[in-house]
Image (cartoon, rainbow, N blue to C red):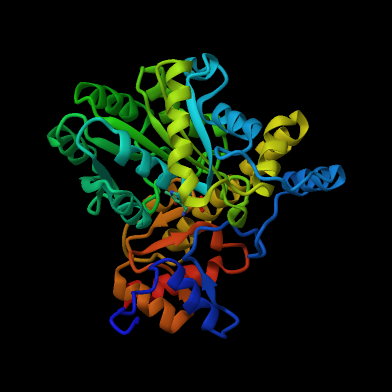
Length: 401
Ligand code: PMP
């Protein structure tokens, strides 16, 4: 029956982890997948998460199904975290929101809802480059995927002029995807002034902004600073779509906790939109998983746990920032590696787009047991006090050829 099914290519990111696992060398480093590691290189369970789990275990909650749109307290608190309690649509109960299977699920629900109900051409513009899965998610949701310029290889920074030109030339009312903060894979974000300009451009062209916020708190260490773009657009009157993930900022990767929301005109419109979100979700997976949403909600709704969580997010962000500084110092001061490395310090969030070429990445894997995606992206969280020097020296060697 399946003789005509061709073997598919391995996932470009998860495939890196496979290669890493197969390598038996003790010096090996995995800088592929974007999961936080502590300074010993170990997966990190936040202490606020552990406490939330203890609280939950001691209350012996039941295992009944959640409603189709998830745990109501959780979705309300997730929206509050993203939009801010003082946001007008939040305060007036006009945000339609549903729990989702982490950020990916939120994007997929959003894509499917837009494919069904967006009243204009069902075209979405994605930045170049972007998280590779965006293309597949939106294509499989039934949207036509196009792209806009984002990253300038020459400056290893934002191609703001190219970005604006491409959005200017997009048909009016097109959907446009923005990374809310900590752009993956480049680590390059617009400044606050540039976001304001983008908000004006989006308004002028009547584009529909869809924000993917997978790293709130992880970029700067502050959940409100990282929500700047989302909150600014909403305060400017944009009715945005938003995908949220709690994978990174709460370290809940495998628990699959997220939310998808749409800003609407009124509580009445919100109710209609939510009724249709249910109809989109029901045949996909019926209703979302319980445990992770309970953990996230316990943290978001308890003053002391919330404070502890905010400190922990800040701690993770700061450790990554300190690795950026160390790596920059090693390459420039200690090793005097040829090239310009300032972007390692200026980039934001989990990833750094190093500028290493595919053959250099290949050489790092083969000669130094260091694994990263072929585009030269490294997960900064994979670096720590024990391996950063070895990493810098290995980079120095491949750059010198
Ligand atoms: N969007 C972006 C930009 C991401 O980097 C990621 C995680 N790599 C996601 C969405 C979704 O992740 P998850 O489904 O694990 O929340």
